[in-house]
Length: 301
Image (cartoon, rainbow, N blue to C red; front, side):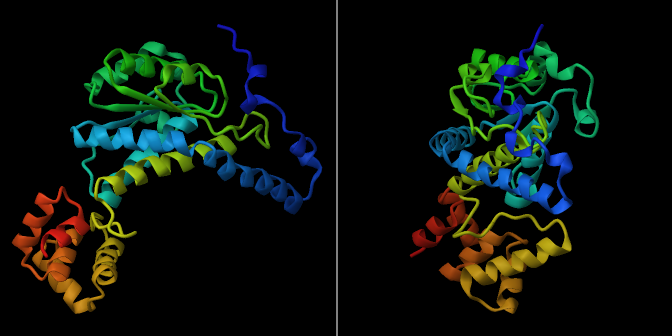
């Protein structure tokens, strides 16, 4: 199969960096930084599509579905990074957000030859996950044409699931396969074809919004506090105390006492203090409020 890279914006040459090899170190970095500044603006143009995909993910979570990312190379690694941060940050089950990469786990550290060109492999990885209509698939590829990702997207559509994509070329094949296409057009890279740079940054920004937005919409945040954070190390133990103190304006001693009674669950501790209830009562209030802290506090009044 012949691939015409000339049609891809992400593969075109950037006139701003045409002589970058002749510049001083500072001037070289200034060119890179100047190009990076364009990324957030490009992502801003896609916010309506990002919002649609966040709402689709929230609906999937409410129905017991999952968010599955699929990608190759940098794109696959970014999906895995975003997925892996959800359990410690928001206390989610490890299987709720999953990142797949062409070539499997060994491809996280080292490229696996020809894996990204295997359409059937993209399909099989979803079959192995028991992917179904309640799940959401998001294909990630700067080019918008990676066969592994296309195979996964086509399979996801065939089972009736919602399919999204993140790519950095307009009118790419992935756009046609997606129900919701997010296409931040960041332009040519500083180093021609090095799509781990601006394209990768754009993908990371979108991925941040997808999971952060979905977690906020499913009650994982109170104000701007990550109230479902799991205390898996000393720093996070202290963060839990700080979260309870900031949410309730209580003393450190009160926060520690409430967290102890709540078995280290920030939401429960916060509801206990602000609603003036016991740990079991706070737990029941949260359960009847679908896990939303503010709703649980209001329901106690």
